[in-house]
Every structure is written in structure tokens, then in C-alpha cells.
Image (cartoon, rainbow, N blue to C red; front, side, top):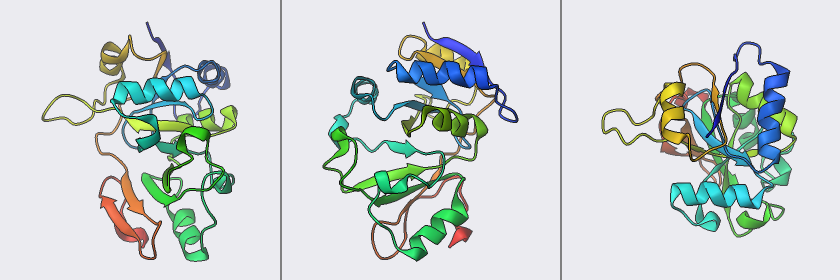
Length: 206
């Protein structure tokens, strides 16, 4: 059964964040709030945890399109090839925020993602998510949790999320009601920005 922790976004309790980080370091899976929908995440450096997420999502790990959730842009070069000034300016303008940016993958990507030509980078504007990644010291791999309901694509109530995911994950964070609109996905891996999915993030940043 998953642990259920209430954390307040305005002022996340460092002790509670440490609990979450300890779960991640042990290879656990967490469900956590972002500035859009709730996400399913694990430590990017833990192969077994990555494989568990891939299995839950029904995809091969090497071919998965999970996002890398980062605390800021300071370690970008560990995962992304060198980018030009105009691309960096877009990132600085938009992040932290409800965007996922597709960028060219670096040769230093973690082992399971070595063959990926591109990666999705996310810096959510949510203190809980940012504090988790900051304390962990490296990104978490993340994917949105979808709902089987035909009307509502994403579950927004943490208690309902716990009910559904109780036996699949190790910890669920109650960070209040989530959004039901996913991030805007923008591909910056080519010469011109390409909108892959219009979500919560405004397109006026261009």
C-alpha cells in the first residue's frame, strides 16, 4: 500500500520532502503534483524504478517518451546537446512553467536513454515538485497519470488517485487538487519551434 502524505505547495515541509526523496532513492515510485496534472515519477538514475514505470505504462523503456523533470536549467548540458542562444532565451522565458520542451539529447544521457535523439525537459512551476528534485540532486523521470474516464482525461483529486494507484506506487502526495490540463509540448530540436500539443502553457512566449 502506498504512503499518503499531505504537503502544502506554498511552503513545503522539508521533512516531508525528505521522506519523498528517501522513497525515490530506494527505487520507489511516487505520484506528485505539478503546475498542470499529477505526475508519476521516479529517480532518473534508478534502472529498476524506470523499468517499473515503463511496465505500468506498457512501453519499452528505450522507446518511452518520459519527461525529465529538472529543478532549473543549470544541469541541462548533462542531458541536452549544446543549444543556441535563441533556444535558451525561450527556455528562460517559459520556465519554470507549464511547458515540456523537446530538445536534442546529449551523449551523456543515462544508459536506458542513450539511443534517444531527443528528450523532453520540464521545470514545473510547483514548489513541491521543484523541492523534491532539488533535494534529490538529479531529475526525476515523469509521465502524466491518465484517467480511464472518457469525459475527464486526468484525475485531479489526490484521494481518488490514491484509491486507483495504491498497489502500483510507493507514495502519493496530496498537494491539493490538480489541474486537468496537461503541459504545452514544444519541439525545439529543429530550426523552428514546433507545437506538438497545446496545453496549459500559453503560446505567446514566442
